[in-house]
Image 1: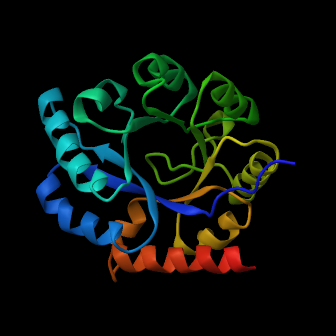
Image 2: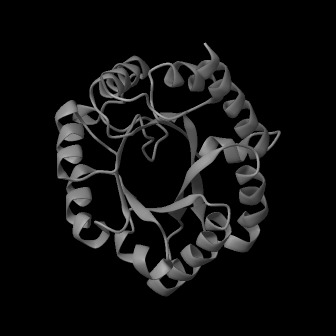
Length: 220
């Protein structure tokens, strides 16, 4: 029998960061609010030097809390920024980025359109796969022909993966209401995205609420 999976943890996705100094207070509060395993840094468009400086500033803030910092779709900056790895939002760029990341750094795969894509990412060397991740229009990636992936299908894929494979899976929660059903699939990490930074009570409150849901799920 496979050993039991570790306790579920949270995975934070930032909004596109253009000014690390102005974003730092919100991020500091978020990191203090729950058990955060990793932060996925999304960088606002800029020249390469500016992107590198932004990534370095956020890396210093995140890593001093023993939280991993991943860069979204910027594998070429990971080593120079001192980040822990990268998350690639489609199977083709994931495969192309492996030589830049492995074996020293984390390679995460998202934007997986099928079970086959997820298995291919795992076989190729993914350290984790993500299901239900958001697209630019706040839908969900991972569905053929451009249709949004239904939430029930996200749950089904996560349950299938958690039951059969040991490579960790990340479940993206598009709202606080989705955290409990996602956690019940056995997903290793629950990702909280851009919506938490717009919560009226602040990101820290949303993270505390999500952490309480994970604790309640674990106690069941």
